[in-house]
Image (cartoon, rainbow, N blue to C red; front, side, top):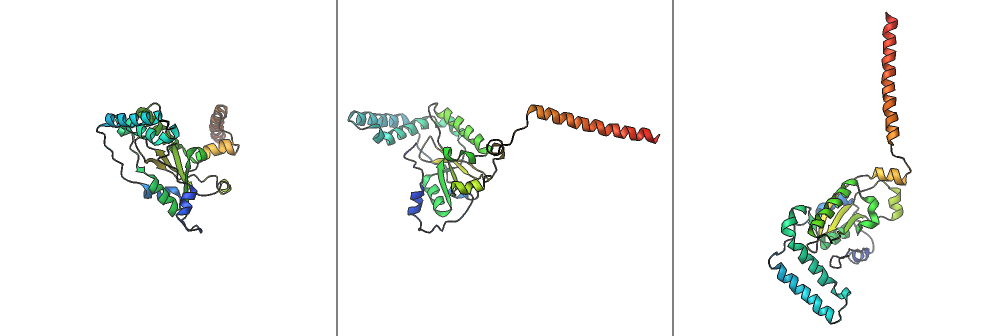
Length: 239
């Protein structure tokens, strides 16, 4: 995880508001516009020189006994610089709006929302979000085959029990860490139900099999044939 883009925690939010929670209740999809910002800009000149400087810094500090944990910021900066080398070739793939930690934290202070890794709330993700995740992962692969994208969601700050009472509520904001710098891409915000997965997996409902579909077709055909027979018999009896 990128330590330069720390996940805003509940404790961070609590420090900046009163003990009594006076924040506004809101769906994430309704307030996503408040965290959008202009696309960050950065200088693409002398990238090779910058990469050489940072690489040498890592080498010298490592030789002097500095452990890898304390070199994390240098490694992250190096990854950003290497990704920026590919930016002129891939920038058209990254058309999502952007935000940063400051705006996300401000949103959490104003509304009853919190940010969490995607892994913890994957059940909240509708199919449209899955498509955006796939698209972003492919874009990152074009930047570097070694880059592993990280995703986070902004969701209602409800307990697990409260969410279980409202299983059909699915309205996250989906964020992705940028490979080019210290900001997020906003992949989308939705207010949809994830009915198919919930019904099939969690509620025990079965999908329609091929055999069932064929039986349904035969039943419809039989119904039409029966209606035609009745119509034909009726006309015959009138003669």
